[in-house]
Image (tube, rainbow, N blue to C red; front, side, top):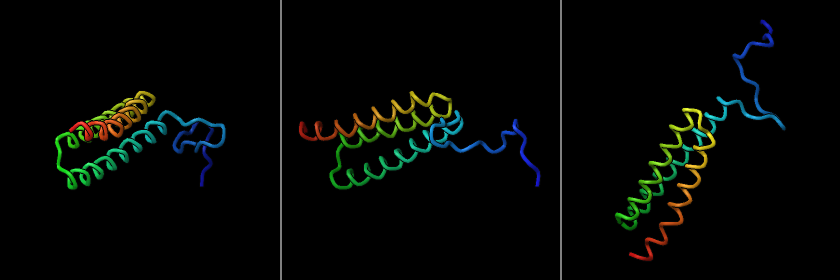
Length: 105
């Protein structure tokens, strides 16, 4: 077995207490989180649409899916903080808007 040199970056160090994520790790974490949110939104949309078919439900969850995809693309391009903001604000807006629009309809 060979010892890794100081400048060898084949295995990135895992973040410990007080250590920050590397840019590559941050992109991976946020992209994975956005993909998980996208899968969750798709499941909730299918359940809600099966229970009560509505264009409002389809539209709101469709927008949430689009924003999740946008967050994945932003994460891949290195805009991880913007991706987190888009994902969080978009998901919160969709979740909060659904009861409002359901009450109006």
